[in-house]
Length: 133
Image (cartoon, rainbow, N blue to C red):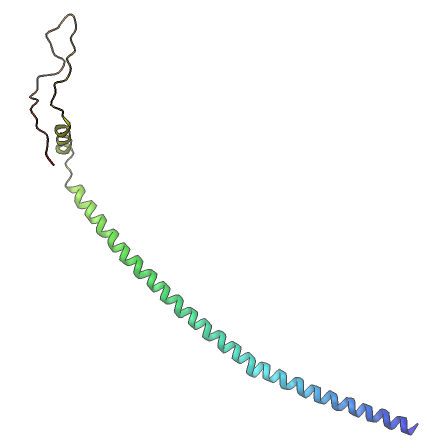
């Protein structure tokens, strides 16, 4: 019985030592995880985020510069359109277009039985007055 008791105590001591060793190993792993591995992961994430922010900032800057240059061209085109509209004279342009489009032939006459000698349109000078381009 004493022998069995000593053997049980030896096994318990052995289990206790294994538990202590396992606990020490666990504590080392836990310390390494929280103080080394996690810190390294968080540092890497912080560097990646800083790089992403830098690249995003550069892209936004390039986008803003391109929009600014395009807007400059748009403003210049709008200024040209505005300047061109101030040169428009509707009455003169219409007359010029009509003169340019004339064929030079006389319009057909509409004669009625009662007044065969009258012409429906007033007499006009149909000389070739087209605008040359």
